[in-house]
Length: 174
Image 1 (cartoon, rainbow, N blue to C red):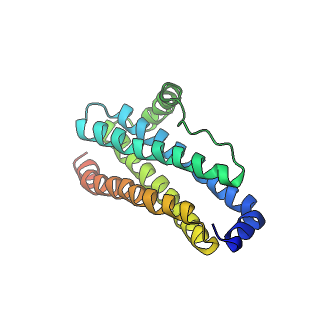
Image 2 (cartoon, rainbow, N blue to C red; image 1 turned 45 degrees about the vertical axis):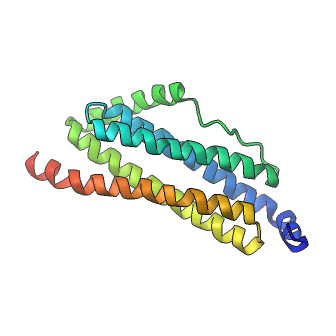
């Protein structure tokens, strides 16, 4: 790392660290949401399997953020939140949502919309981190952002495609 990059890192480390910490929290949350969607919609095999698969990406991002966060004085947990604990919380949330949306198809639409919004926020956070890393000359942080961000975009596109597929069917034929 260049001398300038080291100086910038020390001057702006707390701000960058806060951004990394927030993205770490957001990726954990996105993984939790995707696992919840999978759990709520086990009978829809495509949703179940795809949501679980793409939740793993967020879990991997959590580990990467913990690793690069150490360079900014952070001690983030490299392990994503425990799936058993997440699923217990999700069952509670699911029970609350099921009371609001009596039909499973409406619940799926609501879940997919939530995934899309959440992934869009995570995507913006990756953009911010990538721009910051580039400005600071932190090649490793930039590499992580460039590796992880496309997967977040794919999570968002999957949710968007499923919303398009589900919305008219649910709202018109329901």
